[in-house]
Length: 473
Image 1: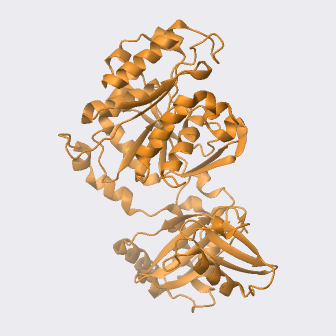
Image 2: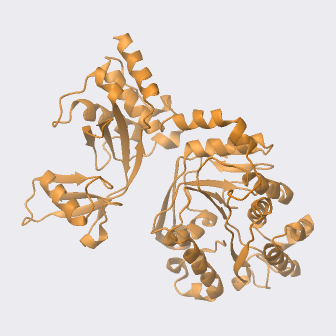
């Protein structure tokens, strides 16, 4: 997909209609993908950082940004970037001989290569996005990008993956183009369309480095990766649209891949299954911090002083966010839940520690936990977005939005996506009961989203932690 910010109506303010064919191509893409959200999306953007000779992988656990640099600050994004899947993918590509470099870049606001395509894809998936692994292939030469795509074709971890190859074509199609004019610009675009339509990377491999430089392109490596997957899996690419408004080439194309009928088998999947198990059995650092806090508290030990003990990435902890810590029995019954709707601490790890203490020992609905209970409970941590004022209850959805009913010092809070809370009316009624506010009184309604991190039911791991704590008492 192309990524000109002007395609987004909030940015274009009418000028997006000058790229009518491109918008129509994006609409076709949305229709084809409606209701078909992958479990994870690998997004190749030339506007992620450049790593010479390597594929760049963004190591931030969550990335956020807006189109504010392009005049539309109201268009915002918050992406989950799953650590374990990224580690698994990096290990796989390294095993295949590709250099991989990682760095934490949590701010997406300058990366239109990510934001613009996701603006349209979110429409196909009900306004939501799957977990996204952000990468840049710009450090690879075209043959290496092609080989990487071929390698990705045999990556198999039982998830349903999507590849988003983001990139514009030549930026030099006309004399007043953003990067100036070169007659090689049109030659490059024609070659890309021919290669995609024929499902053949060879015409692009025959272009010299000088021709590529003169064309002023940014999407070639993304395209080569797409062609590499296609070549390995034998599925055709369909070009949905091409045009060159504003002096820049824009192309939408799609292909559907499947391992079902492929002769390819992943040697990595067979030979390194232990690596997958090691990566997937570990819970998110937020969960590990919550459980360790309660384990040490009930065992009479010092509490953690920061989350860095469990994961050193500062971006995980330095944000100032509200959160809830919930504790449930293995049968699913609530054992404690305490949280904040606005941050009370300077860092998220301190918020998690405080709420884990409160959920285990200060929830008035339950007696304080005993250390013997740790074997039979699981933890979850919900990290809250900022509260948004609600002017119409139609803006609510109990599956997506949590709710706060507030009047002065009184408030009732309900997290989203709770079992048995299926309608807006149910959500509002429960929040009112929790708040103590009468419906005839003046009140204010807020909504919020959550990032939910749940503990795996790896009882062996949890039992070991709990028993170790008992032995220290």
